[in-house]
Amino acid sequence: GTSNDGDLYTVTYDGNLCSFGKNGIMEKWVSLHSTAYSIEIGTDFIVVGCADGLVRIFQTKTLKYIGTLPLPAPLLAVGSAANKSNELNEGNKDSEFKPVKPVYPAALCVKIDISDTYVTVMYANRQLTTWNVSSIGTEEPNIVNSHLYHSGCIWDVNIPAASAARMHSINNGNSVHF
Image (cartoon, rainbow, N blue to C red; front, side, top):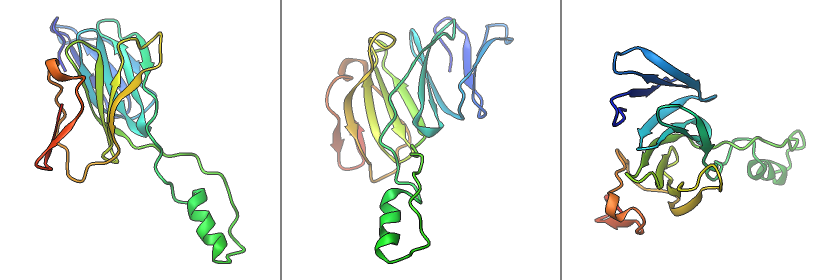
């Protein structure tokens, strides 16, 4: 994405956020410590969607780390307690309960509104969540809206500036409007 001052920002699959100046030379970079899938450039913030439900927020121009959004609800992993209880009920004495690390869906699409107040995230499990990030860095972001699933494909998320705080509404079952 490109910022208002003409700098170009990009993410690499292996997890680097890079800043290129107007001359095309990479001036700054920072490791995301995760695979990156999406990027959105706001006025003051850069939002990056990553694997394992991570959404990282940085300052534009400096790439200073601001914060990470809370993780979404975990996915049910193979070998989880729910799956193990079925094996135990079937009398499989060889199965042993082992705690499983939670698995989170990737943040495939991120959008930030023009005032850098709301971040909307589309996760790989089709969960759509809008966060209020107006005071990130001093307070934990809070959920404004959340839909835990969507039955069809989602190709893009747009946040109209004048209506970002309104509830989502579904039009003809095919699209979500703010």
